[in-house]
Image (tube, rainbow, N blue to C red; front, top):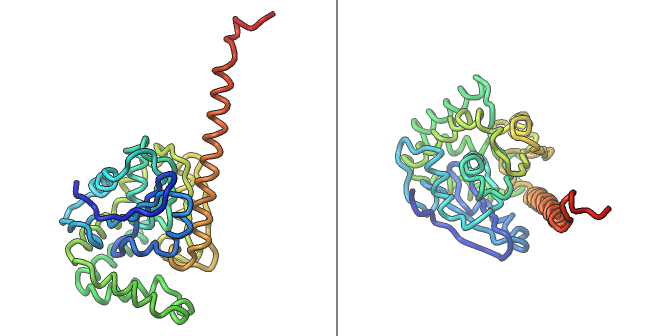
Amino acid sequence: MVALDHEVHGTGPDLVLLHGVGLDRTMWERCLPALAERHRVTLVDLRGHGLSPAAAPGVSLRELAVDVAALLEGPTHLVGFSLGALVAQQLAIEQRELTASLTLVSSVAGRSREERASVLRRRERAQEDFAASAHAAVERWFSPEWRAREPELAWSVLTTMLDNDRTSYLACYDVFATADAELWPRLPEITAPTLAVTGSDDPGSTAAMSRLLTERIPDARVLIVPGTRHLLPLERPDELTTAILNHIRARDCIDVRLRRVSASNHSQPAAEELPS
């Protein structure tokens, strides 16, 4: 376990935001204000990213999840993006008591043979020419229209990618490229209320993958945001934060109803003690 660099904003029920591979906690800056109005929000730099310690080759998904678990003080609403969504799934399986709800943003799942081969080719390209790989990622994530509208944002994302320690990036990319296969048979073990969200135009974390998640995770729901690519927290922050808050609110309403039913049952005399 390593101590992760993080920051906390707001008050209320705990909520943790987990970023994707090659990015850092700043990717949540557009979602943070609305979330921090209702929650105590912890922004985390995963191992090998941002200001957190480096990641060594062979780092595992379990290790990345244990790092995050050390920050959790009780039941927490977990929101994970891409690699962060895999970390959140691992936590929901291994640390059920710490997972109040699960929102999986732009998550991979059930990759086909062709999809797995494609992500492994991207990993090879990153090892051979990291700069070209970073530029290609930004090209995939930003539509030409969005890039023309916000060129500074595209440049900021590219700069974050290029600032990565290469060894850490490749180690964490290996987790991103393979860990969904480890998680797949265990997804039915997730008991936390789960929402899977992705953009309709995301070529890597596809809408079909989010639907697969809802088929594997009991009582999970799916939301596909039309006309959107991979970077939902930056491209469509308002829609995403609304979805997160509504998902948490629905979960909390169910908990309140269950507590009321339980209290009502406990207040009634046992069947054999009911007056005739």
